[in-house]
Length: 86
Image 1 (cartoon, rainbow, N blue to C red):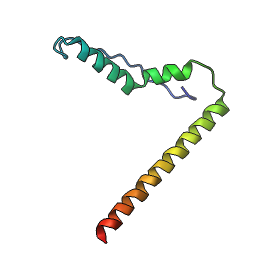
Image 2 (cartoon, helix red, strand yellow; image 1 turned 90 degrees about the vertical axis):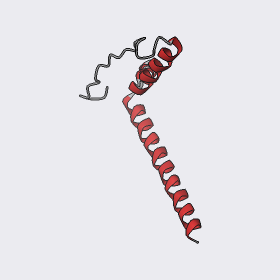
Image 3 (cartoon, rainbow, N blue to C red; image 1 turned 30 degrees about the horizontal axis):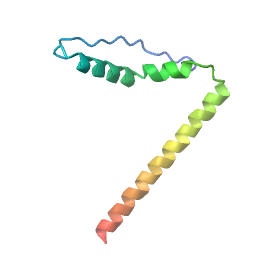
Image 4 (spheres, rainbow, N blue to C red; image 1 turned 90 degrees about the horizontal axis):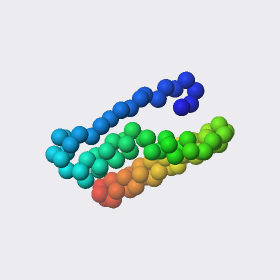
């Protein structure tokens, strides 16, 4: 949690009824819900202390990679449109 940001408490459950008693389906559904909430990611992040400057650097690097990826997608889409029109 950074600054005054409050993390919402998440309690979720998977019932046998919603999975029709299928244990494997219940496990998959539980894993999907935990991934969606980011519980495992947060636990991994909190495993070791990370200096605020390192967190900031990682965050900006991640944003830079995301911008570069989106730019590449945009350029590829433009190339496809150009090829179709010619």
